[in-house]
Amino acid sequence: MQSKLSDIELIQQTINGNQSAYADLVKRHQRFVFTLALRFTKSREDAEEVAQDCFVKAYRSLNSFQQQSKFSTWLYTIVYTTAMTFLRKKRVDTSSIDDEQTFLQLENKPGGFDENNAENRSRSFYLNQAIEQLLPDDAAIITMFYKGEQSLDEIAQVMGIEANTVKVKLFRARQRLKEKLERNLKHEVKELI
Amino acid sequence: MNSIEEKLWNYIDGSCPPQEQQAIEKLIATDEIYRRKYDELLQLNNEFMLAEVDEPPMAFTYNVMEAIRTEKAMQPLKARIDGRIIWGIAAFFIITVVAMLAYTLGTVNWSSGASVVKQVELPVQLNANKLNGIFTGPIGKGFLFFDMVMGLFFIDYYLRRRNMTKPQ
Image (cartoon, rainbow over the protein chains, first blue to last red):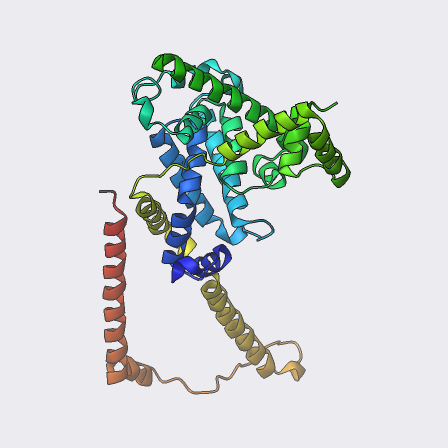
């Protein structure tokens, strides 16, 4: 019954003191919030911590949600700022975020590329692997655009930048993703030969 | 100038103006390079949509709700008191003080000259014996008993809350 309610109705119920309505809201958005957090933190434990923190923060400031944007856009703004603060706290400054070397280790991480049976790997497996290898901002933009049902304007709102800048960033992120995907697939073909 | 790829991505996303949209549509239909690139990017776009969303741990929702419950329980008592109660108490005292002042001023004999207040007469002659009777009678005992029960109830409630918020 509860799952049929809209986000706004669930928010209203939560504000009126119904905590189980908020639990429904968490269930509805947890997968994407967790994925978005994972794009930044690159570790499941950290992503869980960030995602949990986001939902607690959202609960705390639910009264300030003006309903001028989608709830998801408002929530992703919290995820974005929380994840950035988390990265800063972990002493990963802007220069090291932009430094591809930081994430090169992911390409050779155990349990990933070289150890699984190639036959079991689908295209989406390689795609997710390539996304993991992207820089946090690129990975977040790709994820929000393709999986978060966010428009360029909404992504701009989440990241606090101009929509045109998002357009350029999305274009570059797609190019990098394409390169990574091609490189991973080439590597795989070589392994098979 | 935009590259072919950039133009085509804008076309696929539908983020370019209608005129440009039509121009690109024409180019795809007539230009072989555009058509090939468009097919390639369209395929890539469809592939990007297949990206999977990760699943958080099973107890994630429970953990979030537990964190919220703990945070609420740890709020100081000051923050939980409804402001309206404070305003109600303040209003009661203000009205009482104003009423007493008004009554006192109303009983003053302003025409008596140098001495401002000669004698303020209370409306009822207070009898100390009568007052004692109030506190020793059944009403007074009942009131004290009610106070004691309420006191025990609030102490019990406070201790329970304190035990619940204690970290395990």
